[in-house]
Structures are given as structure tokens and as C-alpha cells.
Length: 535
Image (cartoon, rainbow, N blue to C red; front, side, top):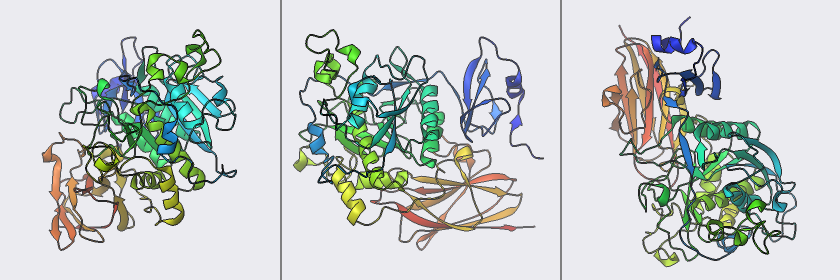
């Protein structure tokens, strides 16, 4: 029986009992005897005093890395729920619908004040991944986010959350020092998905700098968790991050996990249509914008009980300065999360990519006429597809062309454990989206001297490419992937891309389909693969 992994001496040492000095590692393998599963089929947890080397593992990373809350505090602006009108939150319904499907929404954050009057009866599950109680929030960040999404809109008190059909799942991942446990975040995503979450809000992140690996905080474990959520049908929404938590302000890249495939990255916009400097930009991963300045919401009761006249008013106008003047992409993201819950309430059968397409493609374009002098017409790095408009999304769902059909082979965004094993059938149809899913990768087993033929056919001329990668490849979608790992690439014949290759060594090769130029909508393609033995 062929073993999937070749074990080195260092890897064998992992089977020895752990020591007090051993570090914990996330290893990108489907499983390991006696190991704790972090992401099913993608990653396990192992202990070792030094970085383990396991041949064939897609990645190895320490589990003591941290994420920061994407929260900022710069300018004192006073307003309350002006954002409800600007995003047309409830304009689709002449009256509150009685039959909207309940949707479980996970808030992975600092916990919430579980006794806050706005959340009574609205929390269906909770768990802490960092100790303490998920229903106690000393930071206030999670309670603020929860209020924007699901504050009771029918109790004649306080404020109204946007998603009146939301059932909250609360996961606490913030440490006492304000940092976010990466392992806690990953385990929280899995817990939420396994317990029925359809939407996940991540108002947190780590810096992305694709040109400086010392600054860049990309985590393959985090990517595996997001992929797991997507594959199970959950919409993942994340803040693109703020300049003060980045190397400089403004910052030209979205934070992770917003800068991952299958995630809706959300930036912030002011009431007058301008884009604040603190809101991170990104030419690809900033998908949509929502109000993020002078936002009004709920805060924990502990933060107001000693303030004169505020003991019975746990809202941000009674809170500390950072909440009384709340700004940041952390508070724009929950509005998109709530919008996703409303869309799913109308159509629970929608897949995550269909929800993303509806929200993004129906956003109001932000340009000079709308108040943003720096924003060109159309999709841009400052606001993505534009400002969230819930009414437009629901009208599109009701009367417009249907969302693109889901791609049955996702998630297959890289080599190694991320690839989809090809065939049968020998001809498949799939899609690529330049803004969220530029790459599809298929694993193909070839014997020595076996010849591979691949033909890629889009419905019309499109900027697609085929690349075949050698068996030792574990990643293809990073800047520093060795080009020597490439086995072959396609040539264009009319509107098709064609590739032929004779394997010099047996193994699992990776056939990459890549969309290399922007498109308005996803591109559907047909991929045909055949093999032939040669003498």
C-alpha cells in the first residue's frame, strides 16, 4: 500500500511525547495518527521543539501567531443610525416580513455582553476559544459589531440591527491584551460552520504586504479555514483593515483574511461619499464598501454603569471616546454581513459565491459625482464595486438575471491539499472570477512517459492560461514560487488554450487554470483532459 507521506527523521520525532519546550505547529496534511484536526482534510496540530519537516506537507506554521482587531479611532464624528438609509437596508419591504427565513450569523470577535437588552433571545450558540466567557465582553468590540447586525429591531428600545432575521452565534477569540489568537480564529470558524452558520463576520485581520515577507502575515491555516467555510456553504465577510494597524496610512493592501479567495473584503466610506485615509485600499481584494464613520451601536453595560446618566443606556453615545466616535472598517463589515443574512433569508438555497455576486455587482458606484474625488467610475481600489445597497441586491434577486451557477469544483485555489482531483468526467465546466477566484487547480496523476493533453475553451475570447506544475509543487499562487517547478504551459490556438506534455517522472501533477485580466463577471470555461501511454 503506497504511503501518502514520506517521513523524515524529524517528522518521526513528532511521535515522541511532547516536552514543556515544544512548540505547537499547524501542518498542512489531511490527517496524522494521534494528531488534533484543525481543518478537516487540510490541517492538523502537532508538537515539536523545532519546525517539523514533513515531505509532502502543503505548509507548516507556528500556532502562536496573532491577529489584530481591525478597529480604528481617529476622528470624533457624531451621528447615530444614518447608515441604515444610506445602504437602503429595509427599503425592499413595505413592512417587516413575517416569513423571512432565520439565518445563523457567527460573530468571531471579543464576545458580547450576553445580558444586553438588545440581544435577549437572539443568541443561539456561544463558545470561547481564549478562556473566560463568550457572553462577557471587556473590549466592547464584539458587542458593537453584534448591535449593527442583530440588535433587536422590535423591542421599542435602543437601536435596530440590520438583519432582523439573524440568529447570533458568538465566538470569543480576543486575548486580554487585545490580540486575536490565530488558532482560536481558525477553530472558531470551524465551530461556527459545523453548527450551521450561514454567514461569518471577521472584523479582524493581519497585515498583507505581498512584496515584504517579513511584514506579510499570510496564514495557510487561515486560508484552509476560510475554504472550509466556503465549501460548507457559509458566506465569509471580513474588514479590509485600517491604516493605523498597517505599516502606514493609507495602506494599499487589504488585510488577511479579507485578502483571501472566497471572502468579501469590506472597506469604509463616510456619509458624504468620501473615502477616509484609514480605510485600506486594494485593487483586487477590496470588494465593497459600507459606512464606517460615526457609527452608532451597542456597547457592554460594564462600560457605562459608572457614567452619570448612562447606567441604563448601554449605547455608544454613553461609551468611552473610541465608541462614542466609532470609526473603522470593523464597523463597515458587519453591515455587509447583515445584508448577506437578509439575502439568505429571502433565498436560503443560494451558495456563498452567489450571495457575494449579488451584493457586489448591485452596489452603488462611488465616484466624483457621489462624493469621492479620487474614485474613478467603475470598480476601484478605494471602494471595490461600490457602496452596499441592500435594496438593489434584493431587486436583482427578484427580477434580474439569476446569479452565476456555482462552481462544483471549488475550493481548488492552489496546489497540494487545495487542488481538486481531476476526472472522471474527462471534460468539465467551471468558472473563474478575477476579483475573487483567479485560479483553479486540478491534481492529475501521471505515470512515467505518460502523455497529457489539455484543452481549455472559454465561451468567448478571454485571458485564460494553462500551466502544468511538477509533483513536488505545494503552492502556485505566491510571488516566490520557483519557476523551475513549472513543467509546461499552454499555447493559444484560436480562442482555446492547449497544452501537451510527456511526464518525465511519475507523480501527481497540478494543472492550473488562471484568469489573467479583469472581467465584469465570472468567466465560464470548459476543460478537457486526456492521457495516453507512450513507449
